[in-house]
Image (cartoon, rainbow, N blue to C red; front, side):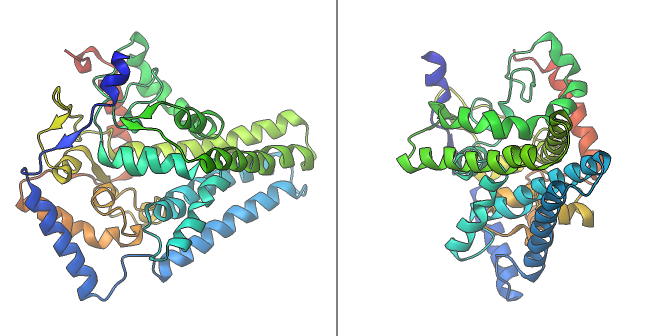
Length: 368
């Protein structure tokens, strides 16, 4: 009970600290949209990207069931399908669930359902990501993203095990299992947990039905039908299914992890009353990092999550606009003496993450 009480401690931020920064940066970003006569939501480029990703997803699914390819070709197609599955989450459903894709709530709701189609649960995601992660970024025992399985130590408060010294090596393998775990275990565990990062779970009755209904739909589409239709031995189909998830999991992990568990971002702890001595916006600047902002391919593929600072400050702005507003945020942060962490390249961010995993696995990062 003591552990539960600790985890549900209400976190509060100091509104007097750097609060002017958030007011000013919001005004400047708003001016950008007004002066350029732009909507904060999806534009034609975003719509074209959506069509491309969804078409590729459906096409690769159809090719997997077509029985016109050799096993090795099917193996490759399964990997490509897993990659586009991840892109649906990163680019389309993520924006929609935030309410950023469209000004029309129905459009956001429909596109958000794609999250369920690829095996995750949109309702649980709203809690773990929109509410918990965006509010309590990098705060141990509150941010669910840094409180993963015990064998992976992502924050300095977590218990240090001897095996953690190797996590920068085996962590890569664990990341390939992340989407498989998400689809078959994680959503259930989070849904039926007493609380998630301090958010007490009280689910509407309909969400129980939705959880099992959409999970069943995914299992039919991506387990039962492939094993029934594809004319290969069951073990070969299983290998392809696991490879699909390995690609999907690695793609997701090596986007999300590069924004908070890298060199620079901090892991602040509240005092005994749950008080953080920074404003919420200043807290975001101290706990979040951008990466590969100048890489056009990364900007296209990663759903704006390489502009994680901008996303945390403006989650209801479609990610297609982040590249343009990033200089505004960076300059405003400089004016107010706030950090702006930015890894120039994707591979540099990956190295930074692996380096951070190694540090987290060493005694120097153990709690006092």
